[in-house]
Length: 173
View 1 (cartoon, one colour):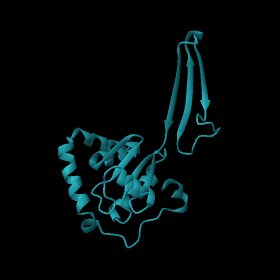
View 2 (view 1 turned 180 degrees about the vertical axis):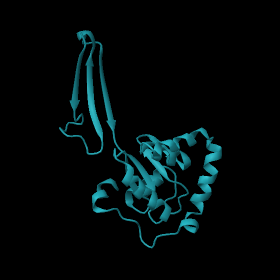
View 3 (view 1 turned 90 degrees about the horizontal axis):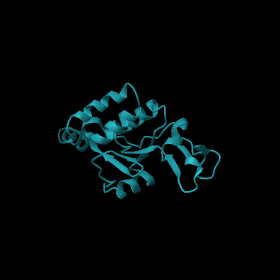
């Protein structure tokens, strides 16, 4: 006989971290002490690293906050302590980044892969942008990099960093 229990707050707390799904599922097969499985799923929001001085980047960050109903993403700007440290950890100069990064657990996405992952994470209709993954990365990334290198010239540079509204502050690191 199979036994299945679900334990909330696998980290020991009754309530998981807001914005995350945390649970432990213990399965004991055929009442055997030898055959058992402990599966832990710990899902934290992915972190989008962006340039808060860039008008285009800040507009995209605000778009994500407006449309991310499932709270799948948090934001960190390269101008902040957390964002700067994450950019450096992943080999990007925070003083002159040429890309946006999405850090999702152990996985790090950059360039067009990062942008497409963001839109896919927002659900419909934005998820339709995922069809662009059918275009080879070698064709997607050069236009992305061209815009990234020229973002200030094309879209402008803010005089001060964009700051989230009080309602969204918990989503910005």
